[in-house]
Length: 195
Image (cartoon, rainbow, N blue to C red; front, side):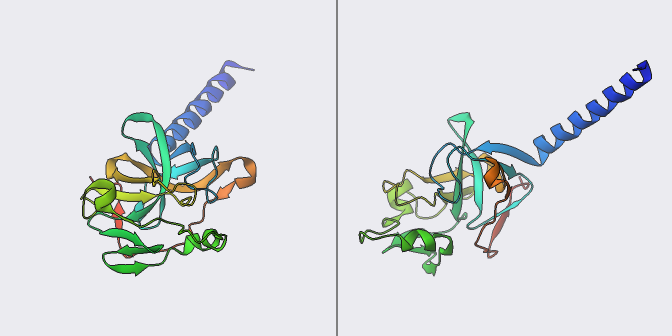
């Protein structure tokens, strides 16, 4: 191998590393699912890519950092946008006083046999001592509510904590491919790139 070949190989390697680093920093972040809050939509220990250049809409699945530990992240579904009043009663979601269907939970609810609700009754006042989702925050909740009756899967997340939207699974290989969100609600969206 000549010196020229070595230099060309080094330049190509440098360009590949540079492009990968820029994509990783500006476009997406790999995330490991550390809990069972989103099962079976996303499984514990599954690895996904969260895309940063996105607008967050109601029912999107987002990754966000733990405010107390920057190395830890969570993945949950956006239920409430800034200014929304959110409450559950008799297993029905109400946003700003209107019934909102959670069609992504239909399969989960069909498996209920004990007469208990899938989602316990609550409102934001009971959970966070606020009447509506504060400005600059999102109300997120995991899909696996039957296993988390104490609602420790509910959070108010600051916009700056959101890493990105869950868009692609890459490990284990049986899950490889795009993550399809079965719900589309474009009634409101918040651009993550806005300051």
